[in-house]
Length: 442
Image 1 (cartoon, rainbow, N blue to C red):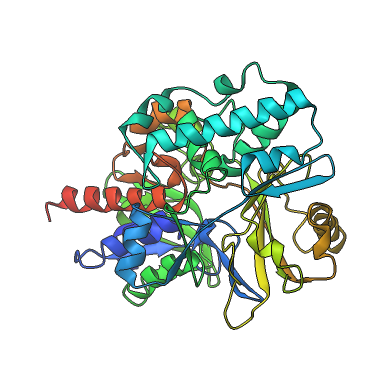
Image 2: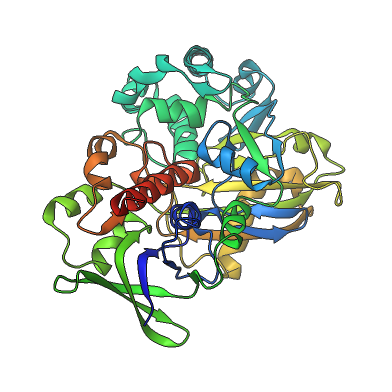
């Protein structure tokens, strides 16, 4: 049996990112991934028009992901929305200004005025606390309050619209999300922010795949589902048991990185101290379902300009076109990809591959975009039991304990980051790699 300096459990951005950072350290590293390929929630699939993201969507400018994309030489294009939209009570209103959007909705005059005021205030606040699309020190005060406090006093229908918009961008409910996080993932859309997001031509998974290609042959084992991590105090060695295509296999390592969703850890590491269990419980990673649709809009070109459309009262919370104003691929003009994020639906294991259920989801999409009936050229539905981490006050307060190692066990994911998503996971990969190297005095 080969002995490793570090065994990594999980082949998402945090796991592969750590292995990538350690590739020239001289340490023997083994990564085990349960799926058939690495990537985790950066998964991309092929549809007409090219690579389509089924999970993570954007490279945020100035983040660790952006640095890695440039280091790896991957091609991106800017996300340049010029419209925002809201679908409500059977009406889809898309416009270049907040006034255009609100005026097209079936609301009373009082509700319209209230919603317009909230949208304009959010856009103005976003402009005040950002520079070049990046938060400044002025945003720090928003990290200690939840969005729910901002929604108090709103009329019911306006609150429903805004809560859906926040859930669409930030995964969780208003009571769970800090205001700073919501501002980034909600207000930036009606603000038509064009400077802080880029789109990978070959999909978000291309970052993780490019990093994996630079590792030593044999460093990664896919289709290896870890079932147990046990410590032998006499030998000071961890034994990692995994079910592989060859059967149950054991891997030994001096240290272990658990780079899987926090709720999965306790089941495979049965002897965690109580303080660690409490900390991991604060790292919520709720499930969600996504549907990405490839549509030919060559004869309805106004749909090419859609950016973000908040969809109230539907299976999904929003429809996002990450390449507004462009065709998805120059090789297939006319094709646009629409991502439907169903954060409120959560984990739906019986939907993907179920023809009847998938047709129901497609019909729901067409109820928002009826002009696209007969123009859908392909789709993919993905469901995640554990999706991106919630950035709430409870997790923020527990971060130091979430990250704290237990003997030779390390913990990393977007759920242990100060933000969330792949950009947070890559930062955590750097942190763990530095800890491992520093612990060896290298």
